Length: 138
Ligand code: IDP
Ligand code: MG
Image (cartoon, rainbow, N blue to C red; front, side, top):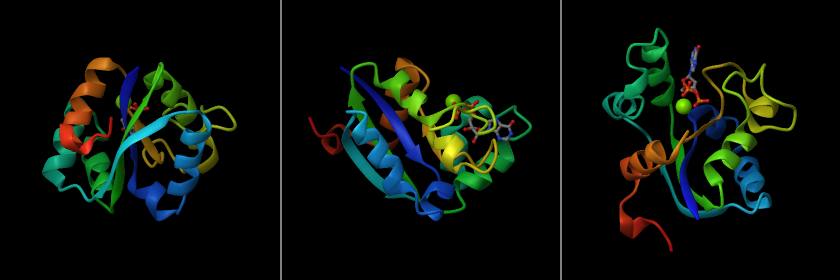
């Protein structure tokens, strides 16, 4: 059993596709074991995306991520890190396969509806960023 952090970004919440995103996860047999809606501060968004600090899009990305509420979730299942990334599609919606969340709903490479951890180490770190042990259902 593996866990990953998923975020429905401000554009996903704003466009009203949170339910559709969650439905796709549930249909794929992925279990949601934690969920909360929060609005990040610029400091928190900067910490979450610290690995991208030197990228030219960092400032714009943190502004976007603080522009409205997000829904953070812990997903659980076999191979769920890769399977969630499959449901999401490529970072740039133009490169994402038809039927993926980003291809179907995202407007551009920045406002791409969802976040998903990219490996076991980042998953553990990102889950801890949003949730404590008591907030995760076993
Ligand atoms: P990922 O979300 O598919 O893992 P990352 O490369 O980790 O993609 O980038 C994190 C986030 O930064 C992306 O989801 C997207 O919102 C934003 N981003 C990535 N590349 C660009 C870019 O070239 N321009 C603007 N924003 C970008
Ligand atoms: Mg990433």
